[in-house]
Length: 344
Image: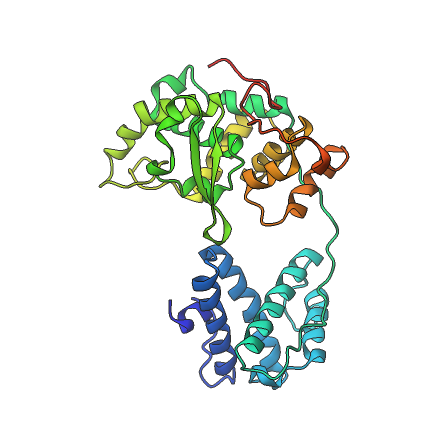
């Protein structure tokens, strides 16, 4: 994608004559690098673009029109502005400010590595330290209720949409999948053995990294019903797609629609607190660790690049660090795992 397309978006002010052209071009080059070399998703690239657009406006307002003119004091001033609103923009929380500062640090590191600046002015600037927030997880009973309201029986036996919703929620929880990974699944990402023992699902995570995750018996049964009795009917409404989860027009199910499926199920299950797709992912990891799964196995299942990210879930369980535990590989829908199996 051209740098100038990546660097701007509908609603951004026209940079022509604003003195920001060189800065925006440099941002566009960095975003192109992230897209091609690191394979970041469009959503992640959009977050980088928005964060760096605020930085560009900050620089231009201070008469800085070339990245080579930036020094450490300027970068530090921007980090302060993120938390105080001194640049006239919104005041950010510590976690949001840390994310924006990280984007700025990455941009300057890229420009220095490319020889476009003599120094990296952000190398010594530390972003705000956000308070550690423990991931929230549903209880085993809440997960059971959530999956049962979307499961077979009643409407689930008749409606293709209900069968799809049941399979989607089982995959989200049973694989610990991100919402983008679940809706991005194609039929070929489900191995033929999924309808028997030992089925695997191929998930594509951040940075286009792939991983194979085993399915428990309940998730396999839900996918079997969906593939045999629901997906063909939904696919007949469209023009043909490889997507696993389809909407009523026969097209790939969107993230927004998948989110709505979960919200509806949570409401029908009587779960009063907020439930997001990531809540199911947190629940998957927390339930495994509570059952004694090895933290590095859970890291692989979640697709975390660093085990430190996975270890946060040990704090949420209230248990000691799980890295010393013997490695077991249960799946959340298997008999040896946290949530006991449900009768289909």
